Length: 188
Image (cartoon, rainbow, N blue to C red; front, side, top):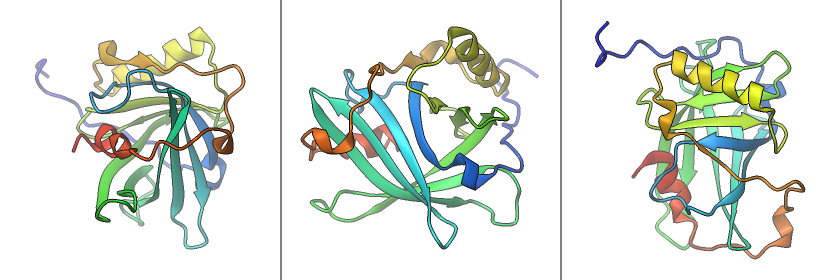
């Protein structure tokens, strides 16, 4: 395999979607020119819907304001046991409501469902997530190594600042210009 060839990316098989639900903190990600450089306390909260889809709430804080976007996720292939999901976000209601869909592949999850590595087949985006706002450095290094094994250039990884006491969603004014979430997630 030459340096320009990339091996196939492997997604987790047999993901327990119910165990995966709940809040995940962004420990690190590939930065995007659309995402605020000083965004902190970034996190995602997943809730299983009765129809088997997943409600997605992504939040970040920037200058004391909460930016957020909501969407839904579903299995790309319902017959497959691979953790390859599609995530669909709708642009906030003050803009034309246009769905934007992207890939969400769980590349690694630990047996206790406490840490995860999320990517996309293009390898343009990468997230390291944790159930807790902070992660041991040794665990972080192990997760970065998992990303390397999947062909990622991890030199672009940027750690996300997380508070010792994460903010509550309802204690900060909302940033109503949250279009950067869409652009940062899908590069559109």
